[in-house]
Image (tube, one colour):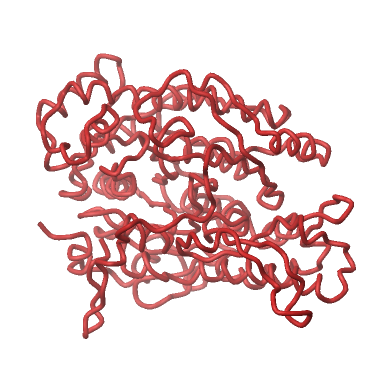
Length: 556
């Protein structure tokens, strides 16, 4: 069986100009980054503003497990299947982070015959967007420390600086550091730390901004810390919003590539869904909706994380509708949620599968709460038995739930035609009765409680002393009407990653909050969540190499 990278390297890509021409773009609408990648003009969306919007299809999943769900693979395969049905489809994805690429996951551009290409470029440095975000973030850090060193006219309290440095790699030793050591010429000593680039507020701002001016305005609102008398200090106070925006000027432009079957794909932005809002950029999604009849996009991890934030944060900020949802599940992952160890997943076990269906059921209930039509996609693996896939099909059909078997890893778009047909029906149905989990007028605590109880199925929340103080302070600052961005483990509906399936009788612990005023939300840290991941015992990087001829190997 060929690996993903072997399949990708044997694919025949069209010149990116042909992909752009198929979207009816002029030469001024895009600029090439090599032969198979391009940047779309940041003025393209304004040019297309009078065009009708296509249908937006959101792909989400059950809670992920080490067995894999293949959400990106299904997203790409569904877009290819829609193309096979003569629909003008465009895929909108996030950019992979080097942290998980080199750490747990390997590549993150789909798999098999449902990949976005060139996968080596996309998984590594791509067009440099993440590096630009890293540079912009760390330029702000440098400016903050320089301001304190040069007299501190703004009276910034070094003990209350919220802004952290970033890098796009998992590196646990950088979570807490001390900077400014070495005497007066080296700066003012203070505690600092790193988060991963894709969890930075700059990343969130890039993904939620609607144009360059909105980007600059959002950057200006970033709260970097507080004065000695606890007044917020912003980027605007430091007068460097222009310089930060300048560093992001090209990164603001969405990236155009193609799938293995030459379906257009726009890849832009890459916030994690467990510690950030987990969606690609508004500009990418809205541009795709103006260029195509159907946009197939995804949000990170399960419906408790990415989909919740897509529907409560992103679509609210972007002012667009979601027409249908696909919930991806696999036999393997559902058996793990039913208690089967990873080593035994190839053995048929319908009883474990039955127990694991409770996890899928909760995510279905969440999408039903949002009032959106949906289809369950069973992402097929070679080890699945007929009895196991039949069980899921029967379980869904007995509850009048639309379900389709997806074999897009092995067969590309042809393996997703049934799913695509059902998605078309759902996206054009009258079933949509959209409802958000909370209103912006509610207090922050009420919003947190609603997400915990409605989306996670918790009995309630428990606020730490620090979180209680922060809630009071944030409400006084006038930040109480913002959406919330929950930072929670992806492996469980609860804040305990060991509680798989559908846990009952649990309480979500709210450890602390962080203001992302530029992004336009409040980050809520639950359990033991950290914004700088660590590498596993055997990182995926150990299997990667580059041959003498420059050919990459081991990238998934």
